[in-house]
Image (cartoon, rainbow, N blue to C red; front, side, top):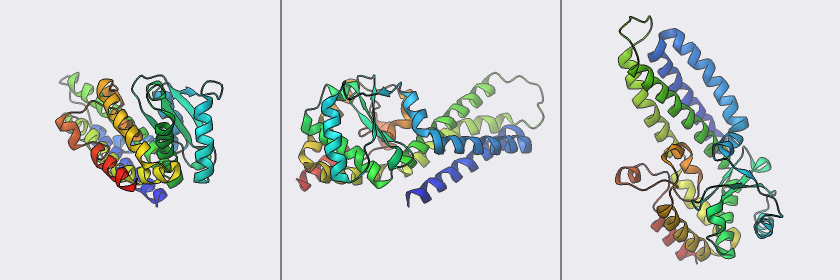
Length: 278
C-alpha cells in the first residue's frame, strides 16, 4: 500500500512540476520540467534519507557515545522483529526524533541532542518504539520522498518568485509573468497539501505500534508531553517546514494558521489514545 502511495505522490508532484514548467517556459519549459522531475524522482527514491540527514547536519551516533540508546534499540528491534537501524545524532537543541530510509533494511533513526537530555529511559523507549513502528509499517519511504520533493518544489517556487520580482519589461518568448507569479504561490501550497495527505493518520498508527513494541503506552504519552513542551521552548527554524512531518512531534513554532495545516494530529488526542491503551 505504501509503495502505491509513493507512486501516486511521485506522479502528482511530477505533474505539478510539468504544469509549473509550462507556465514558466511554454512547451520547452514543460520538457525541461519533465526531465528534471525524472532526475528528482530517482534521487528522491534512492537518496531521500541521505538528503534529509544532510539537511539537519546529522552525524552517525556511535555506541560508545550512547550505549544506553543502543541497548534500548536492540531490545525493541527484537520485539518488533526488524533489523537494527542505523542511529544518527542531530546537533539541535529542539527535543525530537524521526525515522527515514527507503525500506526496513536501510532504515535510519535520528535523535536530536535535545531529546537525549530530556527523556528518561522508559520515555526514550516509547519514542524509539514509535520510530521503529514507522519502519515496521513501511512509512519511512513515503515520508522521506515527500520531504525531499516538497523541499525541492518550495525551492523552485522561491526561485520563480525572485525571477518575477527582477523580471524586466522585455518580451521574453514563452514567458508569462502572471503564470510565473501564480506558479510561485501555488506550488508550495500544492506540495504542502500532498505532504499532509500522507502524514496525519500515520502518527496514530505509529503511536499504537510503538506502544505495543515498548509495552508501555503511558511512557510514550509522557514523552509526547515533554516533547511538546520542549518544542514550544525551542522550536526549529521555519526553513525546515518541508520535512516537519518526519518528526514524532511537529518541530515548528505553533500558530493559529499553522495549526490548520499541521503535519501532525493534535498532541492531546494522541496522548488520550495512549492513556486509554495503558
